View 1 (spheres, rainbow, N blue to C red):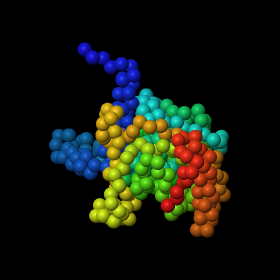
View 2: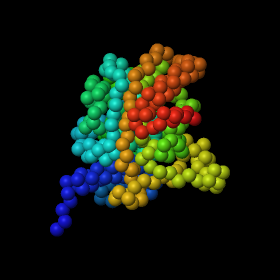
View 3: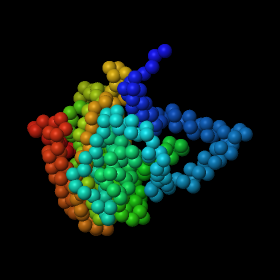
View 4: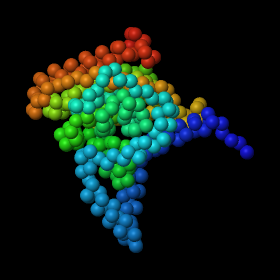
Length: 338
């Protein structure tokens, strides 16, 4: 009988942890067939002896529909699962704080880059078994993501259990006005449109026209925190289609219509040298910079928003330049803002 060594067992658990999150967060939310299966099964039960199951689901969905915009349903037990520690050790992930963060204020952490699946963002802020609690005592993190991810029953509850909420304006307003202080909202302004630039060695961000986070920070007087994950774009390779070709034109059209850039990305499989959709096991270090405190202006003008947006980009560039050589980049590499 063959027994796995301790090292092999640990590696297997780490791979399973990453696959588990990818299956939940990527396959279940991206594949329309699965969503249709859930909806069809729920409706089918309505005409059987188990119709009460459908009624219970629909009742709960109606009652709980606004939850993703009202702070969600954080479950500490789920956030403390040992599975998440294995997830972070797979890469591994590291969180670095450059300045103290007081729990007497509210913050908007602006996370860069998105990458394909924002692995480091979840690993650092979506669980309690991380360095976050030690680095930021008294701070409660809220992962903000697309509201459409909360339309699917069961998955929406699982997503909220790790501290995720909708990134809608009403959700941000609620978190910054009804939860007191010490709240940290984590959002990725580049979004799925930034996937176009997610290739190994890339330092390009989709940020020039993304000013909504600055507007909300000014509305509520919430401090902005520039954050950069060094190594996030190295987790996958991407097949680049010929510029001007049919597929490339479709990609650009799809992004223009939906703000999502469809990509042909790939990584490793369940074994080290195989091909698949798991991320490569490469280190990612996330650096959280000093907060940028902004005044509270209920209706900030475009000029004021542009002023603080420029201030934010300058601070982000400074963060990148100060730390790039520590995490595998050359002195000549620069941050590109598109």
